[in-house]
Image (tube, rainbow over all chains, first blue to last red; front, side, top):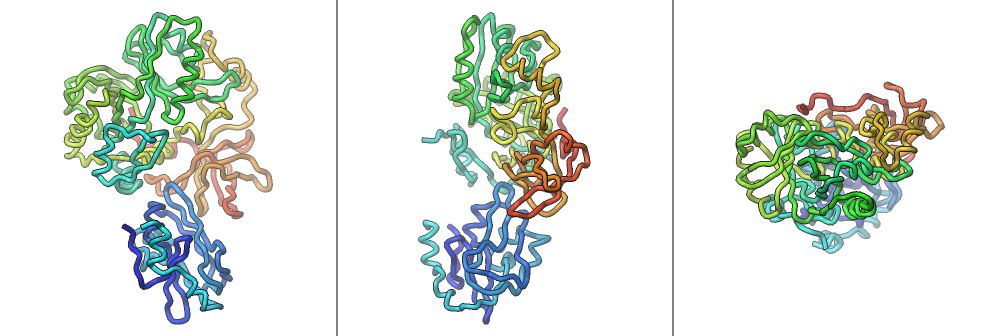
Length: 127
Length: 365
């Protein structure tokens, strides 16, 4: 069973989003990292770039597959997880903490309420 | 309905990630692909390859039949094996395979699982005029591969056959772990190793004996994920990725298994002969990724604004810690050290043509 904590919200494209003051931290869910397998490279967005809900923000490369990840809300990228440069497997080992991808300053905070709850995400992934 | 190999329950109990592949439910990985890969490079790993297809050819015209079908010379000594391609009249590849010569009038062809039905139909359609029988033993035959520098140490505990006398691409029949088996020093990893063919009902006994004998060497079960990264790291082509009907063995740098110097006539000879003398317009080459990115099957390759090729396989090479790929590149752009660019999601990623294999420290004999 995948780890789906209730402290964060989710997208249908398998990002999780954690509200942290007035910024929002985004990562890949445990379910998605497990599906992808060993992640060997993370291509992250640039700090300062614009995020539009649903836009591809970067890509992850696993041994056998590659997947893009998407902006869960509109806003501006204010930081990215530079640890992933040297250690992309953090996304596998610690998806909800050390493996976070990027953080945005949201321009429309009400979009957070549109995201899936843990319960809805569990239904979405069929667990 | 996907078939299960006789070892399915064992893979399942080990917690393997199991996916359908070529009509079978196969283990993709048990742990991580990279750990399994490194176990084979550094010590030893065991693979369930029961999905592979086996056709047994018998009869007085066995050699002549295979000589017509295969690009390589069929007539090797008993106890030897060879790698070959099998081509269409247009030079495109039906499949690549290993052929074991069992006796004067007997051979075993081992073909790719994904091509089994197509190969069987192809073989069937070329029987006319030859006094041979071909039997499809795929559903009754299991295959366990033991690969890595410690493979002989493991296998010698399980047979009284003198493995030291079995050279690379040689084989014998005898008892292995107490059952009748074909014991071959062949593989697809770049390491020393054995492939053990047996009846389905004996597979569990063999697997368990192998795992027990390998315990002292840290043997691990290895899935198809690492099988792919292992073969890529030593530059072996994979049918469906790097070779298929649209490519020829000459383009794929498999000219060494196309016997144009011999007199023998074989399907595709005319086209391959012409292609070899004129030089093909493109060749399969190895490329190291010098930038940040992972070219995959289908990624286009550029020299400046000009598209000069396409990637056919790409992944991380775990033993090198670098991304590598194979691809077809136009004549004139394939010199060693030549710098090209892959285009991934609109971004250019630098590549460099390198000599194959990428990984050169394999224990293969």
